[in-house]
Amino acid sequence: MFSGTYTPKLDEKGRLFLPAKFRDEMKEGLVITRGQDHALDIRTQADFDVFAEKFQNASQTDARLRAYGRMLFALATEQVPDKQGRVTITPELRAYAGLERDAVVIGIYDRIEIWEPRAWTTYTNNQEQAFANLQEEVFPGF
View 1 (cartoon, rainbow, N blue to C red):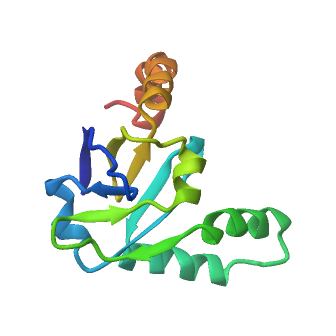
View 2: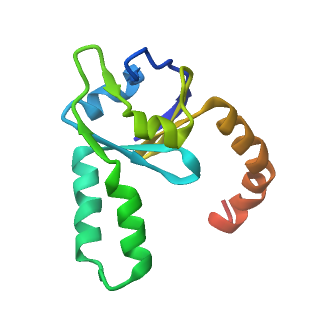
């Protein structure tokens, strides 16, 4: 399970240190791709393979599915972190997420997201009240 918030910096080659807490889970390989809300998603290679199989088995006659697949897979990169735990964020993915030097890396149970810091702050500020209201809807009686 991935959780927590970290603020690594990208180096001049677009490499990012994965938080030490996440490295063991990702050491066999990972996939970085576009996520929602102009964030990047990182999944383990194994998890992404399961996701890709579900996509492959879905009806390709659905235009929404085809469009989603194009956006998801077109910029996806498969990587193995280097010995220092770094991964490379491609220029295209950096542009999509608006990443320059600073980043916010968050764990979201089965995946990691990378956000541009100002976008993350704006998102969390906008979602705070909705988060407070959602608990009862998502987890009745909790």
